[in-house]
Picture 1 (cartoon, rainbow, N blue to C red):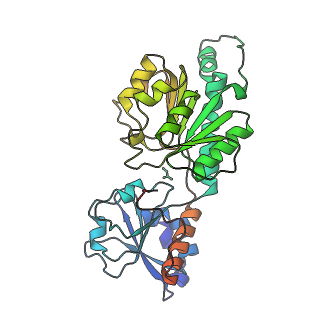
Picture 2 (picture 1 turned 90 degrees about the horizontal axis):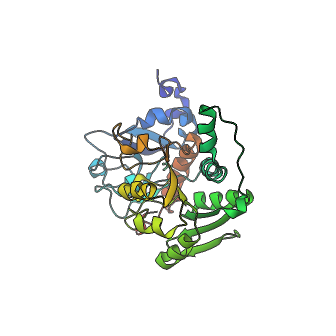
Picture 3 (picture 1 turned 30 degrees about the vertical axis):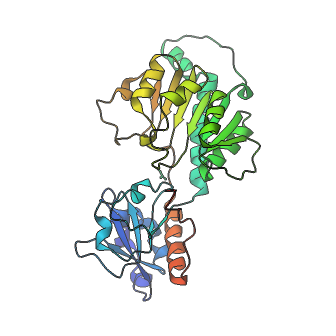
Length: 327
Ligand code: GLV
């Protein structure tokens, strides 16, 4: 029995709710929202996508929609993502240019991302991989330890998640800088850079590069040989943006020639990562299966409700992205 079948029928029968079409080629969104259905049921009626479509539908929730998915819903005013990333929705050719795309902003997700980054940055600083190897070989060998402030960490991306990563790594004592495509107001003490020239300056000082950028045409392939070459030799990459940010062959070459000492990869151009992919067995690569964080289902449901309220009130939904920038 699915969670929706367990939901008491009362609130689901209420009239006057905004219909929300569930659109995904990958996920049973109704099942995914199951636990939070009762929290949204007063405001939103969930409709499954179907062949006939619905010219009256004004709201949709989507995750990896099929390319023609939105052509059957021509009057959508807003499409909500179920994550911080919206690239899988804005890249859909049937989405009209004037439809708002809404991302989920979940402080709990930012905390998880930041913890994940801290794990890898500290792992690099303290050489945890060597201890794993030593344990395997039953070797007792204390090693000189580096102080956090001797490690220069550069964060690509200065949105909600990037700012949390900057704050937490700064708290842990690392030397932190950050970069964004355009200038961003910041209250942090971290030095911030922007634009192509700023990126070159930041990379010059960077030992650990952390990518939390959104995927847009401008950022696709940004993690390439030129970027790695500008970093400190023996650097480290923490890649938790999108797989398409990375030029895979350039990473393998940088690991091979020692420019990078290692990389932690959570996202991949093809997910699941194919079993034959060279990353799996690479001794300098740590792989996690797109698990750096989870968005809470409650935050997704809340986003749906606030978007429905905004549509009713004739306002732009909170956290609607700038479609010209793609984030
Ligand atoms: C995860 O990948 C997200 O977009 O939230």
